[in-house]
Amino acid sequence: MGERTVAVVLGRAGSKGLPRKIVAPVAGRPCICWTIEAALDARLVDDVLVSTDDDNATQIAHAMGVRCVERRAEDATDGATVVRALWHALVDAGDPATRVVMLYANVPVRPTDLIDRAVNLLGRTGADSVQSYVDVGKYSPAWQARIEPASGRVAAWSGDVLFGGVHRRQDLPPSYVPDGGVIAMTRLVLEHGARDDAGPHDFLGADHRGITTEPGEVVDIDSRVDLLVADAITRERIARAGAA
Image (cartoon, rainbow, N blue to C red; front, side, top):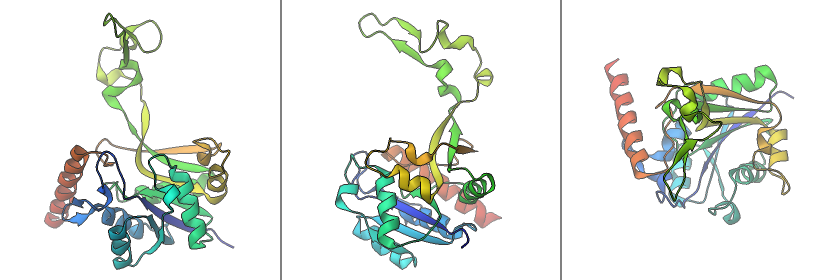
């Protein structure tokens, strides 16, 4: 039996920062549409599944010809882990996929080849998981500091030298954070990470790889400002494509 890759789009109705952000309009379309479309366009994805507790999102998924499973109530709370939601979506759908791509419905902006890059690296290296990262730039740990509440005295976050002795942004050592664009993993490591006794990042496995994006290539919507940025970037992309 060969490898089968399914992309699972995760989106819950609730959100403290921006309620119902997964169906908020981005460039004239519900936010979740952009992620579903990205998954459908990925060459290395065999099928797409949406897991949500939002009725509108379910209707949108069906209209786009995508299978949908209802996200369980216990997996849709503020404290629920996305890993459990991902695993139960796969089980409830009865999908036999050997590789799983986790996509957040509130990330409407990502490079067109990002999903395929992650799946390709996963398969080529035999890794447990692959995740997208972005360089933090001027927010590097080297430039982070501690401020004593009472006196306001500033000290280096780590070590004894403030700002790591680095004067120019260009000289900062590369430092990366997950950007929310994609996580691809094997079914085996996902199942392990979804256990009740698993640690918060066990689903990434022992062999975790990273791919990188440029600042602004991925927009993860958590606030109204993020929504405005995503809308502007998407409209610009549409305009450029129309002019090409």
